[in-house]
Image (tube, rainbow, N blue to C red; front, side, top):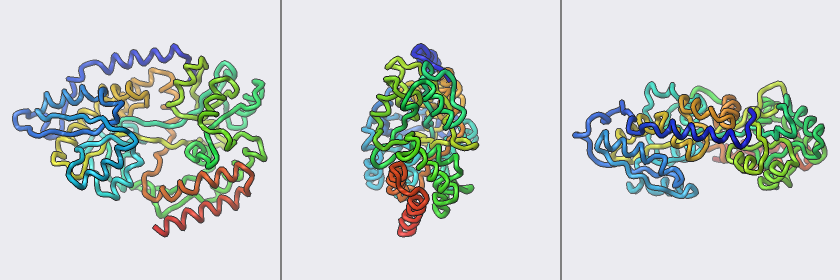
Length: 411
């Protein structure tokens, strides 16, 4: 999807929609229609940048139920650790904002309670519900879905690339020595390489009805070795498309100064490209195979504390107030990340930038939230960086899979 600076004016229309009657949030859950019998309060820890986006919902809930919602802005860097530490003491919040990949840690520590979505689960993007579910149980009310996509300088390359090779060819035809950039760094960055890995049929873990299965490590399958071989061919001793000397800042500079025509990144970097005057197009990630390149999806949402004294009200507030189109659009305004509620996502997609990321996100897969994923990260990027820099691809990948399995087995 093609967009320039003027397309961002679409956000104004979204803001107008979001401003329509937060007081109209209707609660169908327990307690939302009986103000006289309600008592107590809810404390909600929120990323400090999103407190204002939730004030309308908090006021509407108090007006409807008589239950005060206290919004507490927290530093995003500390909110998870503070929550885990305080919940067992009984001093933590009733509700906390966070990311879906916290779920394994939160569940292991016993600090979150299941969430009852009921029929409203069908109103959300499927990837958002999948990410909010751990071992078959929903624990999170999702509000945003974030994933990578390919940014293209539409003035340098007018048409999307049909494949990874075509992307490099189009960039070279435009006279560029560096057609494509992606953040890596000395220790690699597997998050940014995962779309290409999935195109070879090499997920990290297998999955079943309850989500990712930690007992089914797929990293070392034949597809993984094929990916590793391809990665080596695109590294230091091949095309040079991947380079561990390129970190996030270098990648940003290359694209925003017109040195590179393609940049694999997330919505958090679009503003920098637009501000630099780049005519940005948002494309699907060009695949190195005939299969779709599937990035990770990161989903943000709200959890209920396992020690909350008012779980029913907390569930009601999340499902029937945070889970409404106008509130999810308020949150979208605060972060410009695709809403998790389908109706809100469709409204937000009137902006071509958002629509472009949503198109790619339709094929995204949730980042595994299982504790075993921690054993993957510590080896994964280093192995990929070594392959990019010329190490034997298959042997390095086999060792990666062996090291990860041993770490998982050791607990």
